[in-house]
Amino acid sequence: MPLEMGMYERRADYKSEKQCQRSSLAFYQAVRDLLPVWLLEDVRATEAFHWEYDGRACAFSPSEALLYALVHDHQQYARHLLQRFSVHALDMPSASFLCCAHSASPHMSVAVRYNRKTILKLMMDTLKDFADEDEKKLLLNHRGCAHAEGGKTALHLACDLARPECVLLLLGHGACPYVTDRAGDTPLDCLLQQISQSDMDMRTKRVCLGYLVLFMPALRFRMRTELRENAALWSRLVGDQAFQWLSGQCPTSLFVQCMRKVTRSVPNEQLETLPDFLRPPDFRLHQF
Image 1 (spheres, one colour):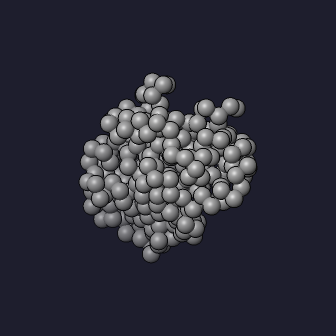
Image 2 (spheres, rainbow, N blue to C red):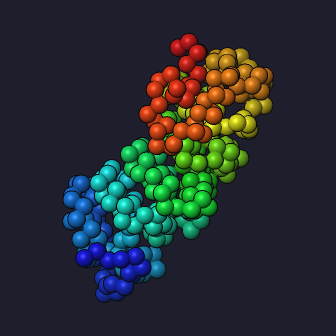
């Protein structure tokens, strides 16, 4: 029978580092091969260990197993872990799964980086149903490692990678669009930098831009001065209307303001099923 919470470190001081490496790799490969959930949980509870930096053999927690499920898109296993362990499946993993001691729980960022939209939605539903408001905000808005990730949140990363579905899921469930990373950039700043650096996936980037504007009643971001000083360039990159909104030359359109009201009244899980004419604006008035 799988072990309950709090029992993951009671087993196997006798395990050597080499044995742990073998069992950890075997568990990783089992998740990669999308083996059945019951088998994975049996392995996790009885056979799989990883080696900690302080010289301990530790069993895999639900949080660590969820990271493997995210990497390999094992949706059934992720669903099981979230249903059985609830928000505990999003707990901080052990130090061997983090890049440094200052890292925070990485599940949201891993989901965005690998574009695991289905599992990200499962995590959002878990937060909605089982997390209190403070816990939810902490998990949604935590900054990643300042050294390897520049202190970016999952929303920053979704903008960096131009993942509109992830942007909408995070914003719709309460991710703050005003949180800054180590450089002082908001997610909107990150997206504008991506827009200025490459013409690739411009349509997708503009959809992300539309979602951000929709969830930012006050358009506060660091690059506004740069937009005003390079008006011709930015008007070409994002379109005249979007440029006017972002530069503060005029308020957002009545349609955008109405859509902000709509998104506040529609349940989070229904945002992605809105009909086309009610979907969040993506500046489609700009001619491509």
